[in-house]
Image (cartoon, rainbow, N blue to C red; front, side, top):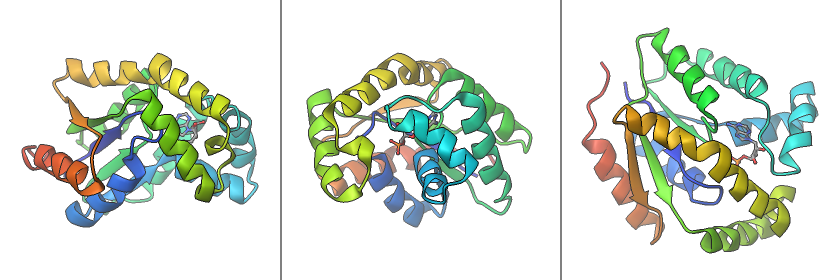
Length: 194
Ligand code: AMP
């Protein structure tokens, strides 16, 4: 099994790349952002709670996010491995993920961090906002807050896995194909857990 964390600031191309990686490596893609949007679209309790944070560009509290992620992972015991996209976003989430995977003798094999500078991110997200229908993609103040939250709360997750020898930086600029090939080169060097 291979479990990957696709890491990087909002708008760095995680979702786009995850779709290609899933196809090539037959992994299950879990995007906590997509899961929250699904819940919001159905007006569930979880969705309504998450909306209060998402519309400001803040993180949804760890206990809510970790509970939702655990449910999704446990629904797929058949998976050959996972690509986590947009999760973990805090060190507490990283610790919870490690503990969850350890329950089935699994681990995170690598964290691949897409590197894209702030101004490129703002432009990409505003551009995506024209078609994504996401309120949090259409307001530059919210976008900049998401970037600040990423730097403050999420970059420590890179260090957490770096200390365990698992973090790798990948240049997130270029064509979709170029970035995909860089990610594949990193993944092909990994040793599956078992
Ligand atoms: P994304 O689609 O990954 O950009 O996520 C959209 C929004 O959902 C984020 O700005 C957060 O408000 C929320 N969200 C997604 N994933 C997480 C997470 N792992 N922890 C906390 N909040 C999250």
